[in-house]
Amino acid sequence: MAYENQCGSCANFEDFSSYSSSLKKYHCTWYGEYYYPSDTCVGSGDHYRYRGYITTMVCGRLGLDKDDEVYKTIIDFQQNVMENDEKYTRLLDRYNVVGPKISKELETEDMSVIQKIYDSFLTPVANLIKNEKSDEAIYRYRHMVEILKGHYKIKTEDVNKVKQPIVGDKIKVIAKKNI
Image: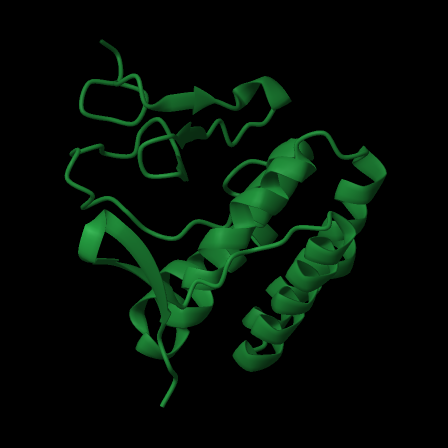
């Protein structure tokens, strides 16, 4: 098989390349993430990482490849800065819940809206990152996420809740408290 030990080599993927995207990412239904076909799939979760769902979908719909400056800047910042700093873990976990839902809505969105997201949010975020204004970049990206969440009426469960079994095989949801 062409993709042996890589994403696409198993039955747990959906091909999103039909959007004429040069990004050509697969969606892994096992991990609920987007991957390039060349990404190693070891089946153990070692290749797991947060993905720029909205950035990937918008750039893909616009036909931009992974070398697009805006795409590279945002994804590199996420992977090399945010994922390596504990202070961003909670934010990334929340995005991991809502990002795929927004991305799904963007699959069929009008191209004028896709272009507006790129021009009005992603490009300014990338410029803020380049100018070493990380906090402002994160704030602007979060603002975009909140606008899109509201527009698509996306409700998300509280990612701070943990399910714990109790007597009688019932599940009780206990919220973690921020101390």
